[in-house]
Length: 262
Image 1 (cartoon, helix red, strand yellow):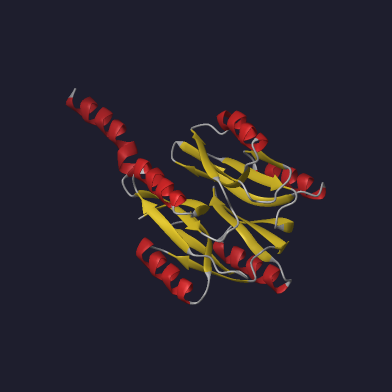
Image 2: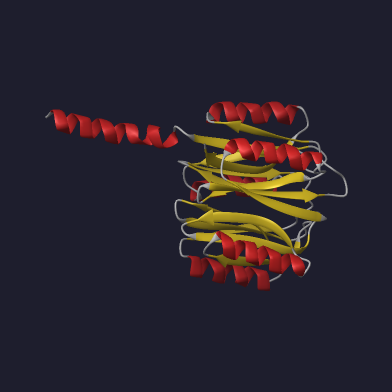
């Protein structure tokens, strides 16, 4: 009986143990052109559809989509200049790539790729500041670095990176507001924070963060107009949302959401 008790206790406590070193990150900036923002969240992606469609009718557009344990989060913003927008999801990578290429052929721009609980999600738009995009999918970080080198040599800019279920996906664009770009692969949170500060001193802005395969992928850009920037790190979601609201009041807008482990 005692063994059964300890086994049940272990099962009940395991989610807490898994979440113990987990934290949320938000990159926020001024001078991004984004205006009013809102965040929608739900445990199921499909359950967000009615609220996303309502936000679209009210003039908002998706500027980021993120998944963390037990939660999908969608950031919607005004001031994007985007006309039509849509998103799709597939569980199998082969099917996902087929659908992505279908919409690219129809003239849509791919701006965001996210994976949550095994589901790949892609956000498409028309009329935004990013144009002529392509999705590249590789199996390891060395192949990703080779792809980045190849596409940058062709004048393309890296727009988004996602690591999940044994894949690295990368979105490249021929036209973006980013003028000069660099990236860093970092293993721990302390080094990540030091790297961000150093890049800020060099005139870069933090475009996005991605955590996968026990390391951070930090993407930095230089723009015509440098942005005043900050970021939030918190292991408590309620506190995380409160801090975002505080920065919204100060004129900051979310550029990117991420999550990682210490």
